[in-house]
Image 1 (cartoon, rainbow, N blue to C red):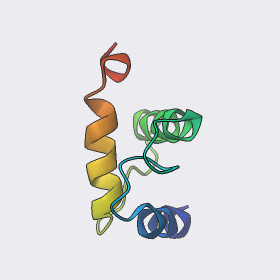
Image 2 (cartoon, one colour; image 1 turned 180 degrees about the horizontal axis):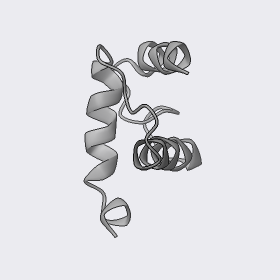
Image 3 (cartoon, rainbow, N blue to C red; image 1 turned 90 degrees about the horizontal axis):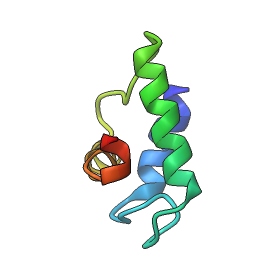
Image 4 (cartoon, rainbow, N blue to C red; image 1 turned 30 degrees about the vertical axis):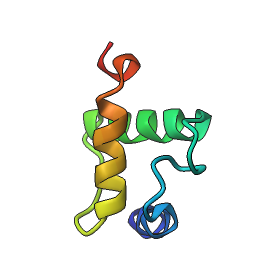
Amino acid sequence: VEDRIRWLDAQLGAKPFICGARYTLADIMFYCFMTFGALAGGTNLPEGCPNLTAWHTRIAARPAAKA
């Protein structure tokens, strides 16, 4: 899983969302996956993923994520 997360981090680059400039179901699903994984004792974002770390901060700040 960590290899795929690192791959996604590289693909994300400077884009604000996974599919580019728009917030999509891909962002919602991956955020849920990461949140559930952390709550279930699994891995969260591995170190060395600055793009996904910034992405996660942006998504977590959205009203729906806070609810």
